[in-house]
Length: 290
Image (cartoon, rainbow, N blue to C red; front, side):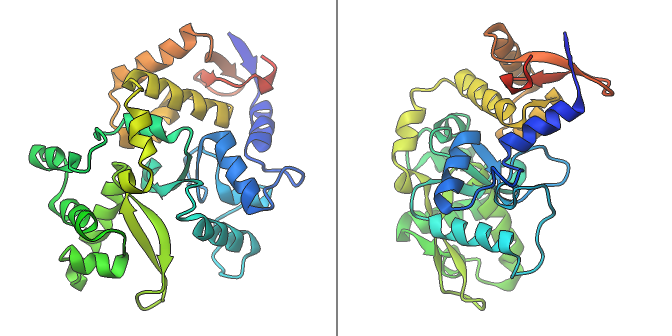
């Protein structure tokens, strides 16, 4: 088993994550290229989660989440993300760790193939009958199904959750539907007290090619694609973090184990020992020179 250092991993991550002044993302087009390159990333960095983020790529360095509206890096993140909605550049929604995630359209079919969807607009009924979809999520989905794209203010009203007491249930259901790859934000509307609200639509309507592409992908192949792309992006990571990243996809421990073993058998992933760490890591990037 090869031995690598934490310094090697961090240097390679800085290159992959664009966390250098020379490699930083400086335009919306470069942001799109960055997401295509890494496959998927978080919008903001998430504490305790190893993943590229758009903020760090724009900043060209590791930094905390900006709190001020005038922060230049934060303003670019928000502005470029808002401008991309509806442009079909990527999938944007709350997915991995139930946080804002950007997924390239190249990788999105593999995520969709791991979901409970079959590509029909009424797939949700089976999930609701089986008890894996909440009533609130069904009401939101059916409001979009009946009325088309809706901003969150009208969506709450049409889903019969306009009361203040229903706000938290509405927000949880929105995340549930995004994690399940059923809906996504597709625009911004001047609605509500802040004159800013997401417009949501059903994924199959906004990106109809994704379910079609996903039908050709076996779940085992989809899992291999996602784990490989993750390890290529983060350079090296323990299996425990891989499990944590894809927790929302409900893979069983045996499914993840078989996925990693298949990638090792194919020569796409290998184990390495990191100096100072008790457990080996999984490596899928030749940038380490191993």
